[in-house]
Length: 326
Image 1 (spheres, one colour):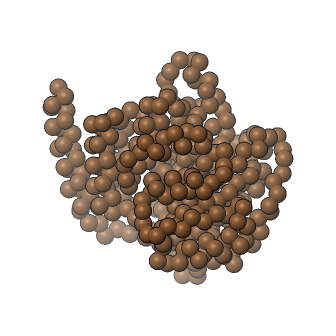
Image 2: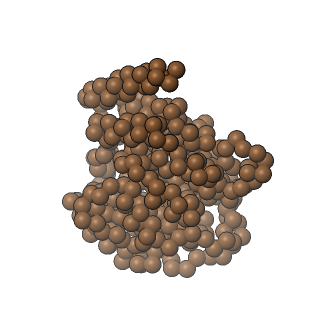
Image 3: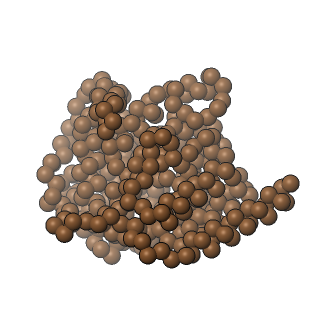
C-alpha cells in the first residue's frame, strides 16, 4: 500500500542520513607529484583566435579509436557556463581545454564564468583570462557572495548569447573531450531515452546528459565511501522519480538547447545537488527528449570538494519533496 511504501521510504532516508554522517579518513583527492605546480594564466600557450572556420563536418577521434562526426555547418554558438567558487588553479586549465576542444571541432563558443566572490581571487584569474580570450569569448559575472547553483546558472544564462548551453563544473571533474559526443547525440534524431511512439522518437534531444552509469561511463579518484554515497543517491532518485529513463540524475555535465533551459530553469525550486535531478524531472514532464553520453567523472586535483553531510541531507530533503510533489 502507499502508506506502507512511504513508511519504508522514511526508514531508508533515516538510514542514509545516519550513514552519510559517519566520518571517513580516506582522502578523496588523488596525490599530485611534488613537482606539480598550480596553473596560472601564463601557462596558456595557445592564444584563441577570434575567427572560426566554416566546414560541413568535423571528425574527431576518441579514446577508444572510435570517431565522432559533428555537423559544423549550422553556425550555432555554444555557451559554456562555469559557476566558480575557489577555482583559481582550475580555471585556466578548463578554459584551455575548452578552447582546444572547440577549435578542433571548428565550432564557435563562449565561456561564461559566474563567480560568487571567491576568497582565493578566482575573479582576478578570470579577468586575466579574459584579456587572453577577449571579452567576446570570455564573459564574467561577479556576484556578492554564495547565492546558490541555480541562480548562478540563471545569471550565466542571461549573460550568454549561445544557441546551445553547456553546464559543467570548473574543477576539471568534467572533461571537455566529451562535448563533441554530446553535440553529435543532440544532432541525432535516433538518440533519446523515452519509450514513446516512433513519431516522437524522431525528434532530436532537447538535453544531452553526461552519465556515469551507462556502459563506458564511470568515476576516477573516489574512495569507496563516496562511490557508495553517489550510487545510493542516484539509485533512490531513479527509483522514486520519473525522468524518462535518464540514468544519471545527480550529474551536472549537460548540453541544453537554449529554449529548453529557458523553459525549465524558472520552474526549478530545489537547491544543492537536488537541483540537477529536478531539471530532468521537469524536462520529462514537459515532454522534452533526453539523450545521454557515457563520461568519466574525475575527482578534482586542486581545491577542496564542496560535498559534505549538509549537502547530502539537503539532497535527501529535495528528493523527498520531488517525490511528493511531482
